[in-house]
Amino acid sequence: MTALTDFERRALEAMAPLFGDRAETFRAQIASATVVTRKNTGVGFYTSVTVDKGRCAPVPLSHKGAHFEVPGVEHGLGIVLWDTDGDGYLETIEGWTVDDDPLVGVELSELKFVRLTQLG
Image 1 (tube, helix red, strand yellow):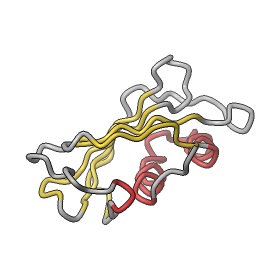
Image 2 (cartoon, one colour):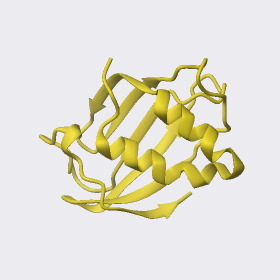
Image 3 (cartoon, rainbow, N blue to C red):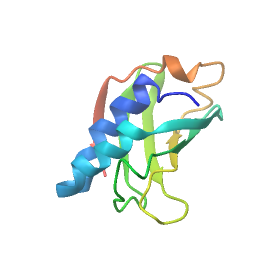
Image 4 (tube, one colour):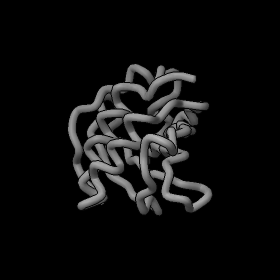
């Protein structure tokens, strides 16, 4: 298993305020997350993760999202979080764009975090 990319980690940290008084609980999930798979779709990506449920607690994840400025992606990159089982533990980080194939040939570990542009 591998670690989150710098972009993924920074984006998730920037999203923590979505969880209000549970932000630190979400940060504990980020800290314990390890990557199972990562897929570049050309217009986005899917990163499947597992979190150590012994080191963190669940949070309401349903459709939490944000948008980020990313070099080389004209209209930025959106992130949506998923807990497929509805159990409150992060399972998938979905990245999406509205541009035409901005991630084709891009190594996801090289994505640069510039800034959060929209939360929620």
